[in-house]
Image (cartoon, rainbow over all chains, first blue to last red; front, side):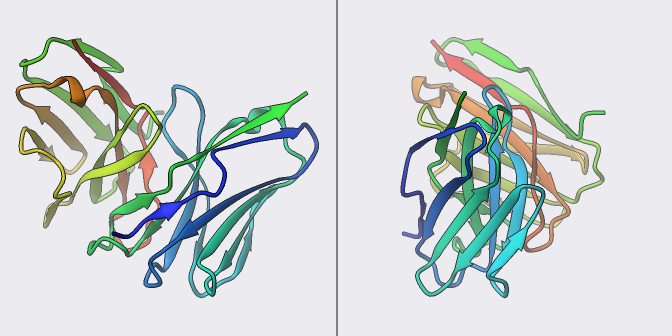
Length: 114
Length: 113
């Protein structure tokens, strides 16, 4: 079946360094991708999204890169802060026959070290 | 002001019982969703629903049923609870169009004993 997967389940970075979280997807028909952040005990929170007609999108301290050729998505966090510690999920639509249903990846636990 | 809210936050119950989780959104969204998150943090869609269409993930047992009294609410009813139903359940909502951002509630941690 279709899947969205992450290369690394855990990532530790020093405070102030940049973080890169990667995600692979398998459905070439996917056309909308989202990154969510989930802090402990809370629901996923939208960070940034990108559509398949773009290859880069920037937000505040975050950048999402999309490489459709290799079906790869990444989230870059600049100057990582302790508050960035959370589980990060990529998600996509378009793979399950329903335009509205998101398929989530397995998540990456980001830990920011002091 | 909470955009998507769920009650209860924690639910502990015995196997075989029937329970409900409530969800409300005040964002004026047309579409609501239920997700299940297992112990490994994997999030899986269970249902998506608007006033026109209910889409059920084929892997969801028919013991689970969504009930929507109005556009702002989508409750989740679970019959004959099983140990494997223990998880965190998240409600979400969106405007409903393709590619619209989904906003999640805080989750309900269900523990079946």
